[in-house]
Image (cartoon, rainbow, N blue to C red):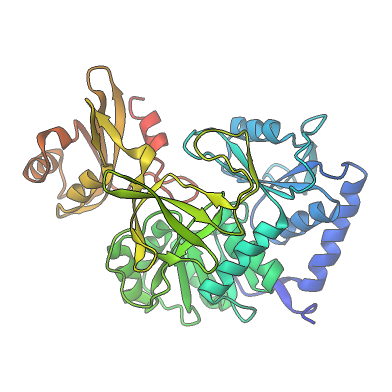
Length: 449
C-alpha cells in the first residue's frame, strides 16, 4: 500500500528511495550474493547511513546470509578480530577509497553459528575486546515493537538519522522502525549542530534520536525546529543542565532512553515534565521486566527480561554470556525502582580501588561539577603500585575561570582526603568517541602517553 511513498530521504527532504524501490534494489544485492555465499554465511556490513546500507542489509537476508554490523569507527584490528570471531566470509563496504559498494573477501571458511542467527551486533562489554551478540529477527522485531509502542512512534513520523545505522541504538531506533512499521528515515551524514537544525527543518523531521553531547551542542545555537515533536537521548547519562538548555531553546523535552546491545531497550522517560535528576532513564519499556538482582554499595544491579534479549554471545565470557533464556544482566549500577523510575549512577567496572577502599567515580565527578565554570568531569582509576589505583580526573570548563589550584581547593572542601584526585587535567571539552560517549578505558589507556 505504501510502495510509492518515500522510505528514505536526504537532509534536504528529497526522496532517495521509495518502499517499493528498496525491495527491488535489495533483491539485486541478493542476486549478486547468492553465487558467492552459502546459506547461513556471515557477511559484514560497513557503511555510511543511506539507502545503500538498508538495501545491502535486506539483500544479505534475502540471500539467507547473516548480517554482521560493523561501525565505520572500528579500527582495522578490531574489525579483523570481529570477522575472525564470527567467521565472516565477505564484507560489504563503502569506504571512502572505493567508488562503489564492493564485496571484499575475508575468511575462506565460515563459522557455523546455527540456523537461528540472522544478525550480529558487536559490543565490547566490560572486556574491551569485540564480542558478537547473536539475534534472530524475532528479537529485533520485539525490540522495535517495544520502542515504537513505548515512544509512540508511527508511520506518520520522520526519523532524523544521524546515529549510525550500524550502532545498536541507530539500528533499533532508525532501521527497524523503517522496516517493521514504515517509519521514514532521513539519512544525514552531517552531525554538525547547524546541519542538524537545518536538516530537521528542511526534511520536516518529527523525531530526533541522538546522544547528550549532540543535544548540548545544538542547544547552544539559535534556531527553531517546529516540526520536531519527540527527542530521544541515549548513549550516555543525560544531565539536567543539557535537558533544560534544549527545552528552553526549542520547546521540546529530551526523553532519556536506556538500552544495551545485548537486550535492546530497557527503560524510557515517558513523562513530559522537566528532567529533575541527572542520569534519570525512566521506567521499564513496554513488555520489558526490570528486576533487582543485587545491591552493591547502595546501588542496584538488575536483571532484564524481554523478548528482545539476544540468543547468545561469541565468545562466551563470565561478564554477560546469554543463554537463550530471554534474560540479561547489565553491568550498569542503577538507583530507584520500576514504579518511580531508575537513574544510572555508574558501572560496576568503573569503581576505583584505592588501597582497599571502593570509590564510586560519580561522587567525585559531582563534586567537581559543583565548581563554577566547570561544565563536566570524568574520573578514572589509573594503576598505582602502592595503592592499587590512583584517582585521576579530566575536567571540562571555562579555562579563564577554572584552574588546577581552584579545583584542588574545591575538592578539599567537599571530599575526604583519600577521595581527592591525585592528578587533574583541565580541558575545554571532554574527549568523545564516534558515538558521542566519553570512553573511560580510552582515557585511561592514554593517560601516561
